Length: 307
Image 1 (spheres, one colour):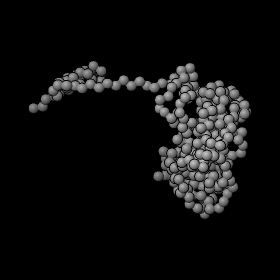
Image 2: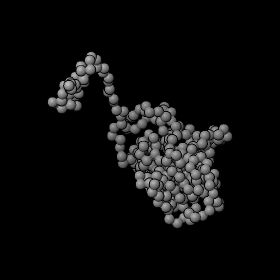
Image 3: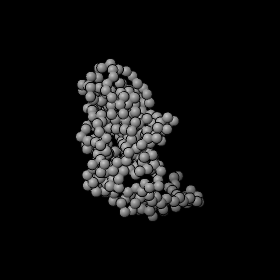
Image 4: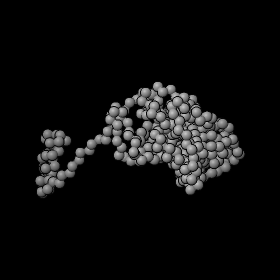
């Protein structure tokens, strides 16, 4: 596998090994300053049967049970591992209906320190660009950060747009589809990702943003102590006005793309058993294929007998 090595960043520094919850990590043996990490999470429908609003062509999320997007659980775990190693805080940020508070409480039960929800009717119907803008305003309102971590993509949209777009709104560098964070040192982070060309090792200056792929770690389970803390935690809900968002850039108004039509394709399949002798079955099959336009004229209408 081809490998590209990042320049500088003192890769020869003595390191300590940490194999907690995933691939082996290479971390500096000396202690660095604390990291303020923001992890973006999304609540997605816990079902494959979703209804569509025919007027807006968006998913109807009311009354549908939601779960944390699976890729975002890897992002939460990676943020917690970095905090456990370097100290600091982890803040979970999400955008959606008030019911998304339940997903944020779940992140607190996993070990997240703080959580914030962006919820406003003005945010409704946002595409990835409008969503990333709203999240960027939320992050700016939270304050200083060293690292933003997102899941690679959401399973309901599968675009993988929000992370890179969020980095652009924040004006910070980003690396996508990271499978391992090897080292954090001297104001930068050494990351690895797998591409079609092989393995890339990339130096990311901080503050920065990464999107993480499946397999970067093994997400932990909530603890009883964490669940108790989650129940007591106050989760602020911020509106578009609270984060000083330009209303022309959020929701449907701020979405340059439109879903023209969303539907579940109809599959019409039926089976038919051909009876009779082998010759009769073959002849019947050929007739049906010819009638369906799948065979050209001149094709033998029955099995060929060989002496």
